Length: 144
Image (cartoon, rainbow, N blue to C red; front, side, top):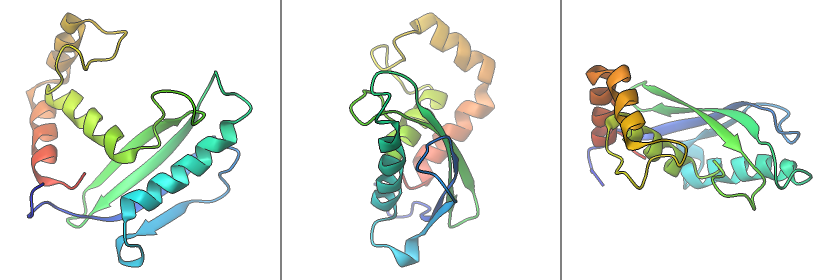
């Protein structure tokens, strides 16, 4: 972990298809000991609303992570029933995977199962070097 990394100051859960969502949730670093844990607690709570669909569907959820330098990272999390694999309630894991994907840092066994290595390389090429470089800079400089 980089001691000079740019810290998260606020996490906002602004919208969700979850039946448990009724208003935006705003978590500020200065009012909580662990901003990531609190955000993930709220995401799990939203995911539990999917209890009656344990084998299908998900609740699309918008999350904004605001950093000390003003940068805003937007995540679209797919909250599934907590018993389902690939449940986006682990926000740090979600962001790290997404940024590593765009940075071209995934290995052949880490790409999504529906994707071939060739397709991943083609997607990276389509995104372009600028997107790849932005993801690398993010991974090197921002708290996850």
